[in-house]
Image (cartoon, rainbow over all chains, first blue to last red; front, side, top):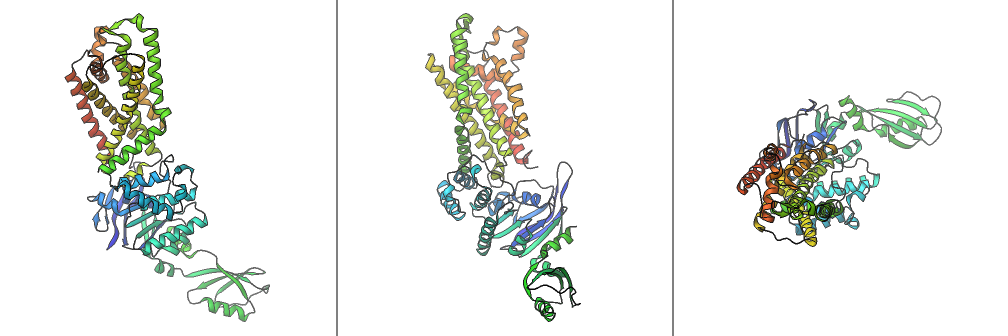
Length: 301
Length: 252
């Protein structure tokens, strides 16, 4: 079953800004789906409409077979949202925030308390349970918003830039937890500016640009579209002044560094062998540019 | 439904209780000042009003003004702050029915009106003796007034886009209407023209009926006052619910 189907979704703001220009999207149940786009592409607007924070101008949405317009409250029960901006009362203590959120979903206080305890422990926030939300660090606030999105045990989790501004440790923690939730069957839809986040987590992807979907495919197929990849190689010894022509483009950057552009017909083993024949031994290899980033720039520029 | 309603009401009651120095205490201080000035210093010189000792005459008006101000500002700030810090989104993403959300906000406004109004009443009772003429009329008028101004505060918050918008109505509309609504005087003492103008002020009917419940004296007819209150509440409720459903200034 489709977790989410969007047809010709349009949003025109009061200032006549066309944020969404009739987008079509579909996400399979159990998918880990990335919605990419630069600032102002329409990602947050689309999420806002799906989650009931914004009114649409036109179009239709179905969530797990339910009509978003006519079965709104049933749809809302299926979705958990972790928004981009902190949106809780900073004076409320964090236990109160989670218990109240459960209350808005009609969950009794006794059941809410159990779920709150599980989530706060999972998010390593249990020691802070009586603290005001405003006193938490940025990373803790992000984890609190993730916990709040899950308090009513939704089937679909939507995250709008979940790791924006988070340090590496928090980011890795959130990634690991999202993978765990997805393996348990939860459909996850995320927007992100960290393209490696989308590349490492998501199976399918849509790219929004200026209110239109410019690409929707699997991550594998999308990455296969990259015609070449640029690698930076560090050598074990000083490079010769001139490097002989090979099957691939090779540029000497400095005494110990080479840049190579590999086409789809050359694999890394062949490249290393060719370099070895010239007496060049490689100590370290890294990507000059994220492959998804290359594609993203091509599609949205 | 009940859980959703209870969650909103308890959250909002905790909010105003947490900042009791700002929300509950100022009205008590104001009452003490009124008692000192109009009771201790000026009351004797003014004499009787509608056959009642002056300080007794103003107490119902002072209590109702407290109820009006507190019910109004409670729902107004509850919604405006929720819009301002975006915590209203916590409710918008949930399946909470809009009419329950509205009832939750109104009830918290009524709760604050009751707590502060009771505080003012108890403060006044501490310094002077009076018996309530009709507890039922007093409570009904209190409840209807608190509901009406909670709704009005809600509508103000829907339209408010900045902190200055929040203060316009209380300062430039509510306060003059309350002070000119017979809080400190009976309209009988006004020239005929100004008596007629006063009859157009809805707050006049509320204060007058509340005074009837408290002291047993009034200018206007109770049925007229009740009809006016109920009709206004019905209109404001429909308008508030419409604005909330449409997400006016909230979901755009």
